[in-house]
Image 1 (cartoon, rainbow, N blue to C red):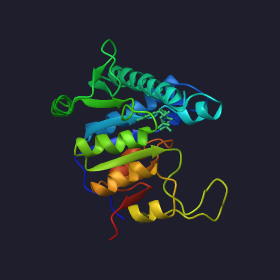
Image 2: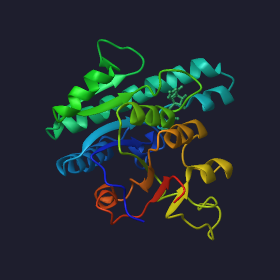
Image 3: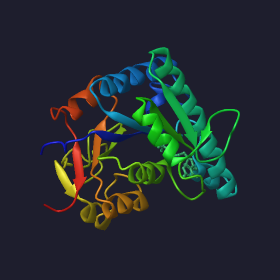
Image 4: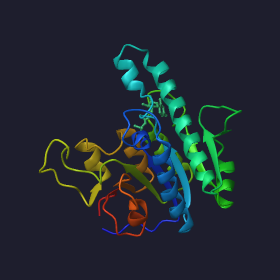
Length: 240
Ligand code: UDP
């Protein structure tokens, strides 16, 4: 399956990739490596919107499981995504890449609020826009934030860089016979509850016809390989 031809992409990185080999938090060496990959993608001529999760620091569900109020815990998770966004901004700027962070939870001293037209202008000027704090509401995830920003910024694809190299018909960590899909439809992902992104994010991509490209960001150079059509990935799209 060939990659869709893309000019503007939304790249979603799960928070856990930022912690590298650590159990928690941000590994600045890994963030720099990721920033180099993002810069290479930008230098190839792409316009890039970035969304980074917060799972390396705090997940609302985990807080709720320990007795916290879910919404309160989710706000903490959103703040975690802002920290990750700032770490990535720092790493990208150290490489000379111009960036702006826009947060769905307003934080004037730290970054801009999400303003679509302003984000559009940043992209025109060759800046990378890092969207933080997901959709800005509890009970959502940064996957939904990524799908929402991909839709409003009219991205040609949502690239989900994670720790597995695609979508499998079963959990590859538990079942060695699990097979990876080259392509799979949005409806199959939703009907079979395949682990791609949460259902609201998949549905938003389906309704706006945005292909989701799931690939491993843990392997060096993989983002460039995926973008050039030579990588290993699964593409979630409309039924052929
Ligand atoms: N979160 C939220 N609303 C959003 C985005 C994120 O409440 O729109 C919270 C939620 O608690 C989530 C946490 O932020 O668990 C971190 O985001 P996520 O779990 O998506 O990070 P990832 O798994 O991608 O690292």
